[in-house]
Length: 370
Ligand code: SAH
Ligand code: SF4
Image: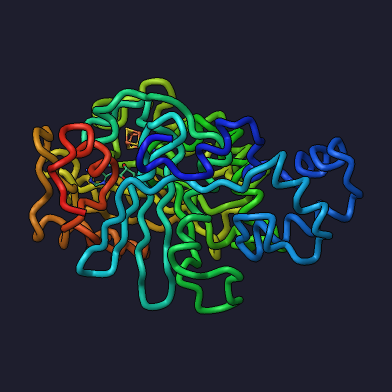
């Protein structure tokens, strides 16, 4: 075992199977094949996803002999923490190393009434949005369900929330807004989120989960039907001409198709609005005329608008809009009846924005002090 490798990673190398990330049905099938009675699935599920057990030894509702047999065949794995960074404002960021040494990031953002975990769905991203640092990295691979779920379970470990209280949780909300495009890895994202939503386990309700997409139109309906989570759409422009440049997937699925998919998103109501993310880029998409066009475009869609000040990165081809431009834009959108909070940047001292820490680690491991 090389230094820094966890027992769990080594354990998988010895041929034991990982249980985290198997759907309830897959776990039941696995345990049945192993010769255990059906009710054992419920017991194990409870230990793994409600109590957060990482070893079979603590599972006292199972006979000792069963625990020993399980430990010989299986492992309950967590991703390995390569870096753990804490911001002065309480934001915490983990750089996680997968078994194949690839790294991803997960960010926890504590707020007064909630704690949100920003989860990654891919290593890198195949889309090349021009303002996004992740977009400058190539897609390495999709994360599997265990790796997506592992981010949430590891955060619960760190926040000491096993079992989690019904109210006032430090980890109460999830946003699929880390690295990657979740709708281009839908199968694994869906398996992971179904486990997260399961009431006998991690039990985070679909109302507290938001999936952000750059606009993978053909998968949006399935996302609403199968998962019913809140949808956030990275809109960022009001004309195809500008959006083609900023979010190149627009060339494949233009604004009209994207907005039609939003209009028919299952479960979108005035009580559960679609969030439209709009990154404020100086002189590109931030004029009063853009704000008015945005309002017209969203007519008839139950919408919230989230204005995001552009988070600059070295070599970025854009600058953030001026505070005045953001203010004027926000006022126009507000006047049209939309809530349009400006997202306050969090964790800037630990580079908690999309893709940044991963890229730093690619450039040189001494660039940050953990
Ligand atoms: N791939 C998905 C989810 C991950 S990105 C998507 O594109 O929606 C999460 C959000 O951060 C998106 O709205 C994205 O457009 C935005 N974002 C990416 N880079 C940014 C930057 N440098 N400054 C501000 N927002 C950024
Ligand atoms: Fe990928 Fe989202 Fe970044 Fe676009 S904004 S490159 S879809 S992670």
